[in-house]
Length: 181
Image (tube, rainbow, N blue to C red; front, side):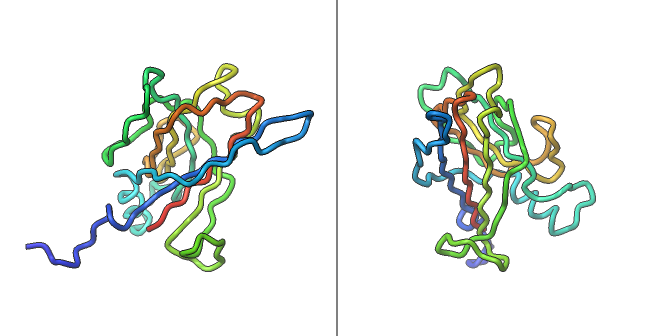
């Protein structure tokens, strides 16, 4: 029999993301789009990552280590819903270390002491993540544990499938991902 106060990670672990898009206009960076927060999915790798960190797993290099971008499937007319059991992006092509990971208060303000909410900020600068000149980014993942700079390495902890986001050297994309534990 299950105890009625049983831990249910699907009710506790939550994620959301938003983007800021910048373009060069007359040599100056101009914010051209700022999206609202949308839900994303914390996937099966997150509980494994948390367990490994709690157990001081010696093979783990750390928590969230890389932000990865993917092309998804170019045939998508609309992005599918990600599934909890996802372990990798469908078509990863670029990854980098996030710019920052900071704690947030329950109201979303920056916090100095440790809280149960973090904000991961990753900037894809003008010259980054352009693949062979331009690309439509359709998926985003956060990787940790044994993740390195090698594509598809480590534990996928968070997954986003979204409408195509065009990226070339005229576009800078700043993605904010909030995780609440």
